[in-house]
Structure formats: structure tokens, C-alpha cells
Image (cartoon, rainbow, N blue to C red):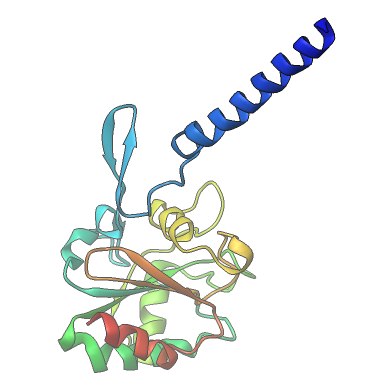
Length: 206
């Protein structure tokens, strides 16, 4: 009889614990809020960053506060001068010329992390872009886009829009990010996606 009572008590306790887990589970393990919204942390609200919260230096050395692009749709791309995709400079310039009056800005960030395909100085990069492709969109100084020394903007971009299999690392030159007018990262495009193939997504945001 005592054994039956003990078993009943244990069973009742197990049921109450299971039932309790369903009651507290959603609160204890709720999904994180969507990126770009406010999180509740320790009783205080923490507003997540947007692209507009960052700064970067241009090829000429000017520090540019990206907040100047509020209200603009952005395409942010890591570039290289000696890559198989380097001719995408022409397509990016065409995009810029077609949509700049409607609110598109393209921000180019040279990077030498992929096969050493951007070895030049800032001055050499500027001359190359202008001479060969007539690049008129904003180009920035050479940066790392992967690893511990990655530019803070790129740490943010890759976190907000992971690539295939949810990997954050940039795979190669000319990876592109689409950003809306409020600085929210919307989408990542692989290096082999031609600039013209971004048009429909850009038009939706303009």
C-alpha cells in the first residue's frame, strides 16, 4: 500500500512539473524579437542598430557618416580590381545612373581578402575604377569584410543577412547587400548575381 502511495505521489509530481513547463515555457524560451525592433533586456529597452549608425572612410580619406543616406535605398558591395567579377563595376554604375535620381545609392568597399585581388592603394583603386568603368558612386577605403578585423559595418551586414546555410562570412568579391530607406538590411546577393538582376528588388524599395 505504501509503495502504491509513493508511486502515486511521484506520478502526480511528474504531471505537475510537465504541466508547469508548458505554462512557463513560452515565457522562458520565447523567440527573440525580429531584428530591427526593440529588445527587452534587463528591464531596459535596447534599440538595435541599423546601417545608418555606422561610419566609414572614403577612398580620399573623408569620414562619412552613413546617416547621410537616410531615406535612400542602398546597395553595399565588396569590390576588387583583379577579380573575374570585376566587370560588375560596369553593371553597378549602370544601376546607379538609372536609379540615383529616384533615391538609390551604391556603396563600394574594396577588399583584398579573396585571392589578393585588390592589392592596390586607395589612390590606385580610385584611378582604376574611374578610368576603366567611370565609377561615379561612392567608394570607400579598403577594408576587411571577414574575421576579427572586419569593418564594424560588415560585421553588422553579415549578421543581419546570412548567406547560404546561414553562414555569415562573405564568400567572395562582389557580394551585395540591399538596404532599405531606414537602414534595415533586407537581402544578400551572391557574387555571381549580376547587378541588373537586383533591379526588381530595388524598384520595390524606391
